[in-house]
Amino acid sequence: MKSPDTNDHRLEALLREALAQEPTAEETERAWQALTARRHKQHSRRTLYIATASVAAVLAVVFLLRITQPSPAVGGIQVFASMDAPQQITFTEKDGHTLAITPAGTTATILLSDSTEVLLGANSRLEYPTHFAGGSREVTLSGEARFYVAKHEGVPFIVHTQELQTQVFGTVFDVRAYPQGTPDVALYEGSIGVTYRGEEHLMKPGEQAFVNTDGALQLTATSAHRSSWAEGFFTYDNQDLRTVMQEIGAWYNLTVTFESPHLLDERIHFRFSRQQPVDVILQVLGDMGIAQFVRSEEGIVVR
Image 1 (tube, rainbow, N blue to C red):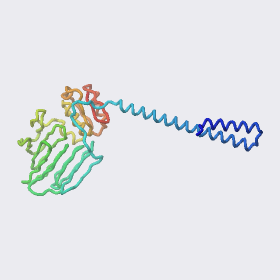
Image 2: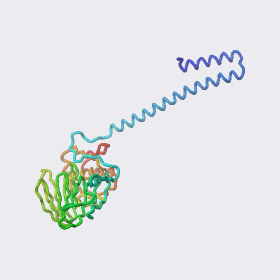
Image 3: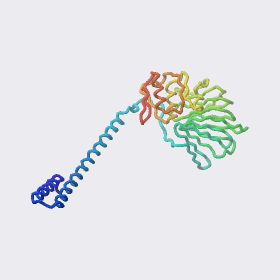
Image 4: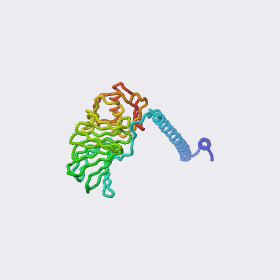
């Protein structure tokens, strides 16, 4: 197969030959159009090649930028791991039970069949009987929720989590039980019993029960920030950075990794709306000068 250049030279030779033989105007015009069409086609191929090469160069730059973005440290201390979550609130019914799931950055209010109201936190799952029956009302929680339990004499309301079981008859309380997070219960009204490792602990309003780093259940006064999640705020008053980042990771469903162990116990004072993008939150935290907060597709690195 002859190359485009060979064909061009042949057309030019024919044109010169035709001119030497004093061709008609029509013959000259046909030869000239053939040469012009050939060169236009060749120019189009070159233009396409240049455009393709330019796109490839742009993609290479984008790829280079992506791979040079900071990513979570391998081998760091992970305090929260992102989970599979839907893009919107979902309710699934099966075998007389309902499973409610919330996405990141979203809460849902659920009214149970006994008139108990539940505010389900972001990135959370609540499984409950579609209709309560029998001598107890039992639900299972993974994540965070506030319960406004309706009173039913002789029929306790029980919240099961992976580590804690909370039993009440009628009261207002929060339960937090994210995987890899620090499980805790905060009581605002009434009285409840929290069972941990087979032992029940009775709580009074204003108390908070949580599993400490030694694996023991500890009772303290409810911290000032504990209830602010239901009001749409991150609020911390001399709170350790581990807890802060666990809650931020849970709300935005992002894996959080600390590079330095000593940063886990840094204390901060902070209040900001949960409706802000995570990049804004991290920028404000970074401006405090305590640590660097690096955002990537994989999650957040605290260094």
